[in-house]
Image (tube, rainbow, N blue to C red; front, side, top):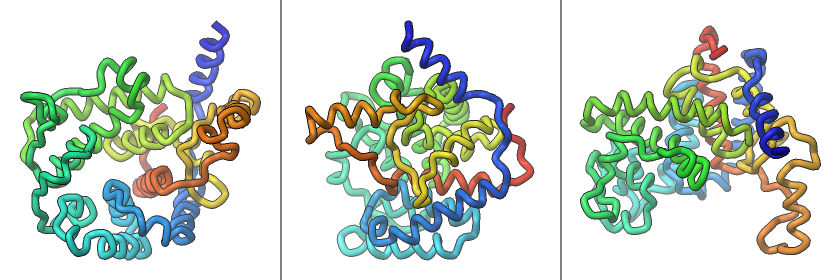
Length: 300
């Protein structure tokens, strides 16, 4: 009962009415994130996660940012060379690139990664279960019941499926009319997740990002955007580490992690994880999008 009351209080605080972040605050978040990339070039250029480079490409286009455009091109030249020159993932960074279908890449992919592969090749991929292909992710919500899938096993199920649906659209793949209603259904699920889950983590940033990106600022409560900006670290980046917003220090996950570290040092690091490429790419794109339409109204 006590935990339920605490969770309810945190959820209430995480959805309270708040002042919309000013354009100055948005610009500061964007510039600080940009500085993080400038200070961590070697680290990020060694990361071949094409989905993150897709986000940086979109951010560079929204803000017409020369530095980001050049960084994305450097990544393209470093990642997609030699045997990787025609891999399908290249289209996430360079949509018009000529790529070659490579079934050998599929063996180690998770279902959502196969959906992304479907998007960049416009070709359905078998999921390993008889009769099932990635087409089902473009026709039905794969993240329900949310109590089991999103809150139980995969807290980014809805946002990953949304990304796949959006990427399929951006690549110009032929899709059924049902994709439109599916997109709206997934966005509604993500909005519900924001209301129910007050824990700040990588999934929190991803949820706010997908709402702002695909549904617009009118789908995002000011407090959600503010929470993302407030969790930006001094170095300009973000971490996917969990935090209970508004909770006392003694109730934060890192306190328990420090205790558990004494007994299981190999499983629980004593310090907070540093800012990382995954969370910061999402934070940067969100900040860039929030600057694109200064007159847009956010959700009440």
